[in-house]
Length: 110
Image (cartoon, rainbow, N blue to C red; front, top):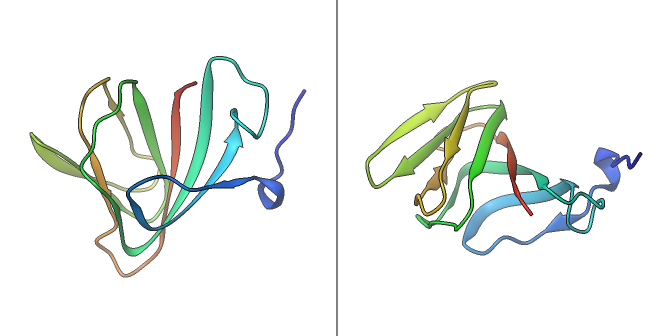
């Protein structure tokens, strides 16, 4: 068993993420997972990512606040425990349009 305590989770810098702080909960440098990794992102008010695609599937789950997911085909605002899946190659941007911090879990293949 490999446990990651929140207060010991390694931070990581994600390209084109602004006013966000990201932690690795499982996988990569946190634990020896071989299928997925789990990240936790805190978005300050106004925090956002660029509109960008990835070659792998991504799943986002909002665990605090509200986060708007923008794609070239539209947008949706997710609240507490709402989730979405983005397929490989599907461009997305995350935006916190509120005056409160938001937190999102991210799951994606290694």
